[in-house]
Length: 179
Image (cartoon, rainbow, N blue to C red; front, side, top):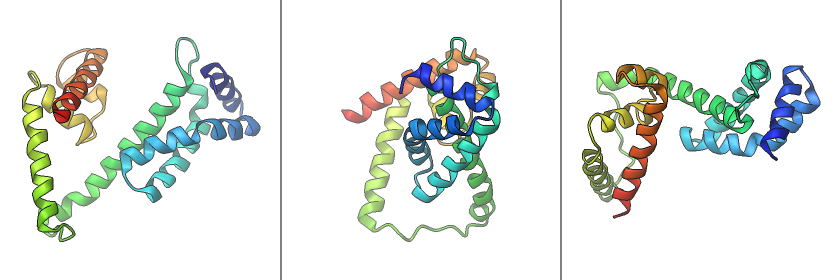
């Protein structure tokens, strides 16, 4: 479905049109589920997150501004930020256990542990190739779940500059990992 159609559906959802909401779900749920699954890495949790994302969309559809904005991008952003919130809550809940030293991962065989360590070393080497504070920004965004806005403030750069840094850094990391 094209973006103008999604824009129209979002406008109708803002007016509490249940048929439009059903159509919006049908058109966008697979893409939003893929985002949730990729970020949360657990099918059950991604399904729960998708349901919560659509509840947010129902309540926040009136905040979407169609002028110069993509409905598809707005929907993806709602899903992404919801998943980041879930990851932060998960991290906060796990912190006391990790601090107590009670977390052990007996699930990996020695070969798997060696392979993971090797892959981790490759990622670390590639991260070292990034300029300036880019590696820290990437870690903060994609490991710790910091938002672009938080990073822009932390590094004292405009928001779009931070987005560009992260996009270019990910491209460099991908190139490095493919070598």
